[in-house]
Image 1 (cartoon, rainbow, N blue to C red):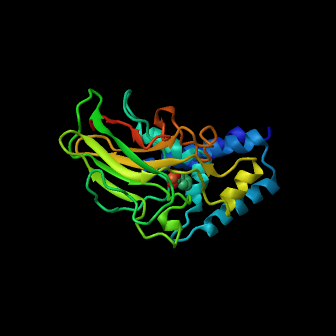
Image 2 (image 1 turned 180 degrees about the vertical axis):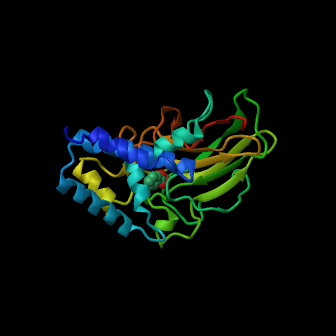
Image 3 (image 1 turned 60 degrees about the horizontal axis):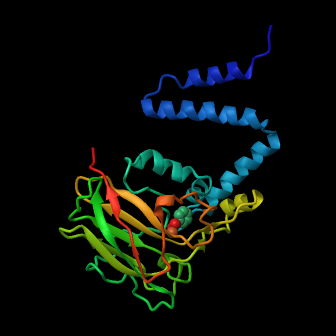
Length: 272
Ligand code: BEZ
Ligand code: FE
């Protein structure tokens, strides 16, 4: 009589989930089992480590409230959020690279006239104008494209993190005209740390990583009939470009912010 092997144990568990009511749920649970078992076997997971893992995930859950989502921070710092964007945005050649959405987007930012500033509050940062066009892959301008823009003030904090800022400071939405051109005024973005006071921060410290993001401005470009692009523009002179804590940097998104204006064209593709 041979010993029941881990492979037989895996087969037994997979078989137990092989007749799901919801096909996708069954596929997801079976795949999670396969990869979790392989992970436990690969590292030779001890009982103590398994318990520490349970306690870690419990602490992640307990850190969450209406404004803090520690599971997303964990996903971000493991690079999983970026992977999900890569799988789902799946950009065509020649289009603008996507990156992470992040937790600091606020819907319904003020609709502004082209060329206006996204600042509401005084800011002693360096003024910076962003200009360019929204185009398709053949270079044709996209009319009616909505650019939803947000960034931190020059103190490195978003309005939603900082009670001293007016709500919607450093946020704005702009709609292109027939020429597809856009322009808005902001301040030069700065590098900033993502929240490090929870279990995701502890995980970063235990593994020798920092919790900083390089200086960036968030832009979501959408238009009827084209695929929405969730992206950022990064400052080429920023620290942390090669060690973004959430793995969001792409070479094509790094721009020169050393002058008073930046030019960048967003290239979108037809939907479907
Ligand atoms: C952000 O860029 O706003 C961000 C992205 C991921 C985690 C935290 C912040
Ligand atoms: Fe950000």
